[in-house]
Length: 54
Image (cartoon, rainbow, N blue to C red; front, side, top):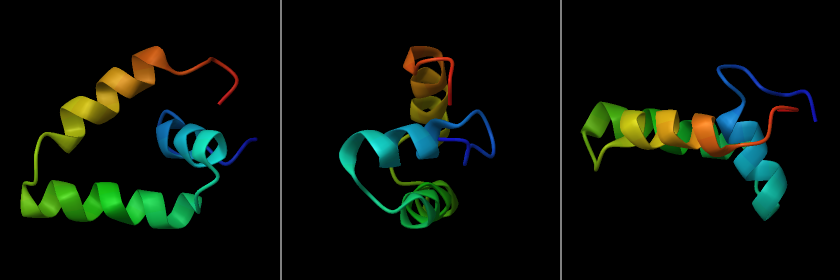
């Protein structure tokens, strides 16, 4: 999969769990804007954990 935009985290998660990558990106954007949890921190941690091919 080569749909990675910024670090490829959403593309990796969408591929792994069979989700829509665009919808997942919107979830991260809305969570960041609304301040729900720590989406930026979670995104950076997932970027370190994901495989290199994304």
